[in-house]
Length: 374
Image (tube, rainbow, N blue to C red; front, side, top):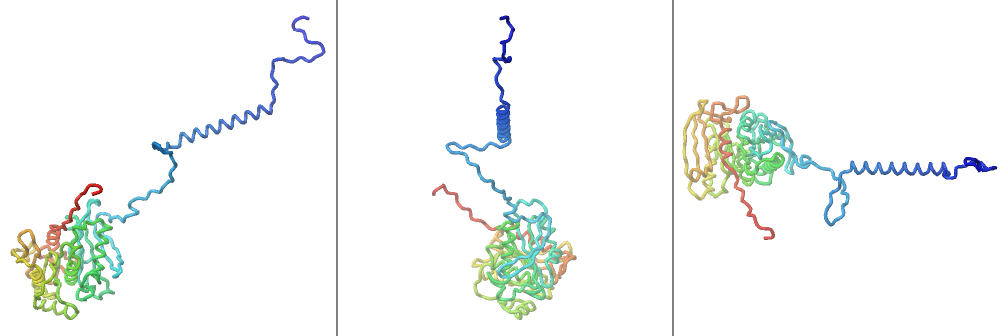
């Protein structure tokens, strides 16, 4: 038979062509596409997922995500520099409104703290203006806390320094003000080794009491036109001391008072000027050693003459600084006329108190370093 001819009686077919099943072909194509999609997804996950840290000898385990908490949410922050804020403090001994001034400058370093107690009829804001202490705080760098007496505690906004409950540690107004001071130290990051307290009139008498009751908190005190810690236990006794002086000095030994700077006008008609001698009497009864004294006389830039006497043990250990402002009445010496009860002509009591305060710092005992396990 010739080449190219067909077998008779049969349909022509290609002997080497495979038989194609369209259903099997579609099934295999769909499986391959699913595998390619899965591998693509795994590849993308490996690309975008950060590598897990590996540790030697241990299997890695995914750690649960933890929410980061900033330190500002855990600790209260100091008010912004240059701000004068209001606050209300509550303690087991009562509530107390206050104003706090934060000086301009860095908010990181720990600043000294000065507590200022106003006189009768004054407010925290009025006392801040009259003493001009906030301006001095910007210059020298310290916090100023102004507690404010309420009319519910005293109708005249006087501190109750004559009441026995307000004359001792752990009770009454001393306890409230001490607790408020500790609160401000914590929240405003104040320097706990440089804390001081000062006041005028009833506030000055209260400052002397509180500083004596909490010598572990306050380093020094400043008293302007006030009274020393004495034997006054009633309102009648307080009025008598204010009009006539402290009376006969006691002879019993007393605890050593903290270093104190005292200002008093010799024409004061509200608190008798002789009350300033009570601070020296208290100091003499508390010190077994004899005291040395130095006296300086001068005239302020405003024309007021003054006498300044320093008592202590030598030149460095000054325990009492007594200023008598001649011709001045019951007013803050060198204060601003914008505030009440001020004498702008006198020497600057605010500046002198800050000088006296900042020269003193509580000595903190250093804890010796020891080796581990010793």
